[in-house]
Each structure stands twice: as C-alpha cells, then as structure tokens.
Length: 275
Image (cartoon, rainbow, N blue to C red; front, side):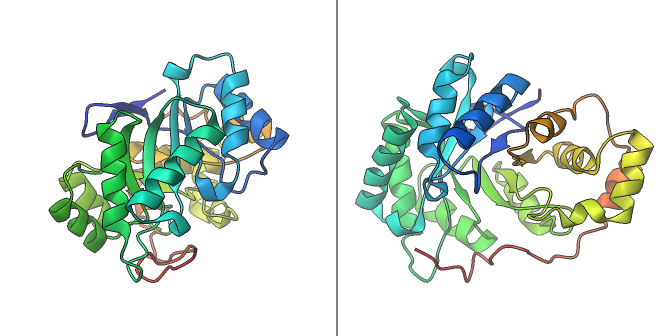
C-alpha cells in the first residue's frame, strides 16, 4: 500500500475505495467491509451519495481500528454557505457514526451561486476545531483554486476531479503540483469503463499479465495521483487493489498519457449547477 503526505503533514492512502452510486444499506455495508478486508484504508463518500450511514456501519463492523482508516465525505451544493455547511457536516458525522472525518471536501464550486469561499471558510473552522483532519475541494478549476488561495487561510490538501486517460487534466495537475495540492481522480476508469476497450490498454494488459483496470489504476499511481475506483463486485474490489506488484515502463506511461483528448464525461465545473 502506498501513502502520500498532504501539505498539512497528514498521511493519506494513494489508492482508495469510492462508493458513488452504491445503494445505501446492506450493499454499502458489505462493500465497505470487503474493501477494508482486502486492504483499502481510504473510504470516499459524500452527503449526496446518501450512503454515509452504510459506510459508517461498514467501518463499525470491519475488523480494523478507526485510526487506521482515512474517511472522506463532502458537503453538497444545496448546503453551501458558512452556517449551512457547519450544519451539513454535523449531519454527515452523525450518519457516519464517527467522532471525526479525515478529509472534508466542497463537492462543487458552483461559481454562478458564488458561495464556495464562504463554504470553504466553514471547512477552515471545522479544521481549526479538530473535527476534520484535513480539508479540500472537488471539481475546482484553476481559477476557483486561485481565488481560494488568495482569500482563505488554509490551503486545500486535495482537489478531487474527473481524471482518466482520455481526460488527464495536465494543466490542472501542473497547477496543483506547484501549489502542493494533491490531485485525486474520480471516475478513473471512466464511468461506464469506455477506456477499458481501448486497444492500447488491452495490449498493455496482455503485456503485463494484468487487467485493463489494473493498468489504468497503476498509471494513476505512477502519475502521483490519488485514485478511488468504485465497484460493488467483490472480485473487482480485490482486482482493483492488486496493483502494487508491477510497474509500467516510462514508455508505456507516455503511451497512456498520449490517449488524452481533453473530453469530459462529467459536467464542467465552470457551468455545473445542481442543488
């Protein structure tokens, strides 16, 4: 297992388990337990996923101490604003059944609403009060990050964004690296897994005797990106974790880098508005 050190000194697993669109209740509980059993120590959820309760239960039933886990959740758009965010955090913490969260993120900037600075200031308050160990953002473009860096006190540790071989965000990654902000990839295999059908990925899978998903996850890791693949299938949860016993050559890394077409499958943060 590989860890990265965030800009506040906190250690974060580089490979985590995401629960986007995982049904709450027993499905989430069992998936989280399985992920922890396999070796994942980073669990990523969000208020809008509506499965924080299941995540908390899975953590409770797992045979690993809470201190060994790194739990991330996020404030949703409808709860943006200073007081609203503080209230939303308390609700998330209660659903999770935890005393603290390791990482709390602003889910989207929603610049047209223009509350993300106030929302982030609430995260700073939670951080100062010790209710969260680190704070960051999701889906922030460079201009959104520049504004936070100029107007807020605590630098975000992470920017979690859509990132995969077809949309590898080189400019954003360069900006984040310059400012010591880790990039974390959601949708690393593309939602729907389209990139798995790419001929190069299939060829590399045969070359390294790995699956296409393992090749892509390894590409993220070697690019110093935190990555959170999601699956509820036990065999896939295991497969996605078996990526520490091989390394892609620099030539093969470059070939995957060259697949970038700068085409999103998700929303553009500059335009996205949903509460």
